[in-house]
Length: 432
Ligand code: GDP
Ligand code: MG
Image (cartoon, rainbow, N blue to C red; front, top):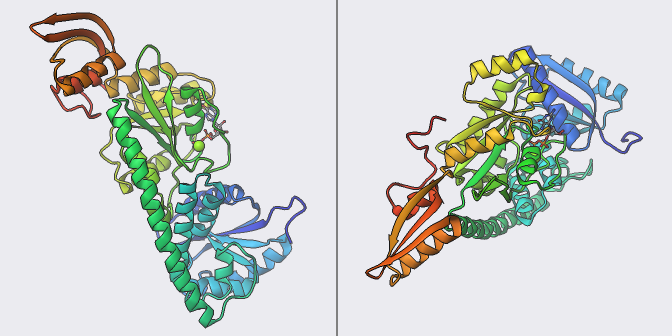
């Protein structure tokens, strides 16, 4: 049934209802097209229906459903993707009427995540999300079960089999949750080690396709694949960023956010996103040239709140500035005076960005003199820290005490002198 290039042919359906205006629905459908392409399908048909609200039994009206079936025949569509979540009953009824595989937006996104997960943790999390989505939909699910498992069009299991399936799925959910807990603990221990090392972590976040991975590569000079496909980055990568002089920070590349991220996924990826909530600083990468830029920014803020990262300080980088006209650049600078304009692709504005990060993280170096008792284990550790993170310019001993004068990142100096808390809260004198 699929086209000559082996890709499945997808029809997309959206609904214009309630407060949603037509152009918003069109944009949502375009985004759905991007998701479908990312899942490996070719979009052959797009359809919008205006209705005050969805039909409880069939989602679309009866007439529209019939014309959808006809249009699918004509376009040779293998499957139909709805831009909304469908109830199990709607799914069944539409499938009967249209005679094709039906997916909703959530299933499509889950499918993409399943294809893209690389690490064991990522795979476990996706499977958990899929099972959690599947379980409440099992009752009389018919063909839906095999579809959620990735199969096409086979007949559904009988009722006895359903009960066994349900038990099996619950057992699997339990096992996966335990495995994820273990991974999470390991991750927590790693994070603790990083904290001890006094090297701050910056988490890259942003709407999908904003240029996070490109920026990550530019700042770490590594080569993780950047791509136009959505969601290439699923598992966080953490690498040291190359900064001038002795300043150090770790950068983590994270999953791209999109609007209306299925709730199952937010929950399932919490462990991954904890990396974000736990960062010293969030670097929000924005596609400055996206026509719906503000909506995307708002979507990212919502996800940050959902994963408990609302309190982490943020630096906003407006990326793809090479695509803006001089006029548009001026407008942006007027509207957001503290925005950093960059082009990750061309390497423009990166120095300014690094300086901004440094200031916010209090990585700037200042000269301090600190006195230690070398007979004390804690003080010996602190002296070692001074040597590890700074440049010692003078060493003095008097009455059994050692005084080190060193050029140290403010962040480390803060910590050693305990003069103030050493978290990433902006310093009062920080203009940013
Ligand atoms: P991510 O999804 O946020 O990780 O985005 P990627 O880094 O994978 O980039 C998505 C697409 O945007 C790729 O095709 C990049 O080449 C492109 N891109 C990234 N940065 C820039 C930029 O500064 N200017 C332009 N014109 N394109 C960029
Ligand atoms: Mg990426």
